Image (tube, rainbow, N blue to C red; front, top):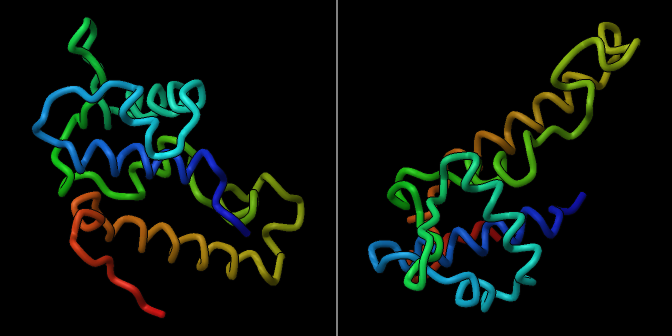
Length: 138
């Protein structure tokens, strides 16, 4: 299982905006220096704006900026905005998605793993990514 480019690019964009928090709106061109194609970046920033994580400022000095403080925005917020809810199987959210979900012997496993991933993403804030050295558990 791999994270999609949409999720990766969403995190890169939010990292860039967190890095420049308090400096005013950041132009799309500058954010794209994180290696994100501009057209794709516009779509992702649109999702982040609709989720209330990013504000846009129009005009010559316009651009994008965080709608909140980096310490208040979790990676779960970002992933939900750009990817939607993270679930390892479609049966984890609603029993009616699968005729076997009520008796499925592995459904609880997918639910537990999905919940664990989401819990971990909720513990990490954008501000944590700004630390000089990122935590590694390898």
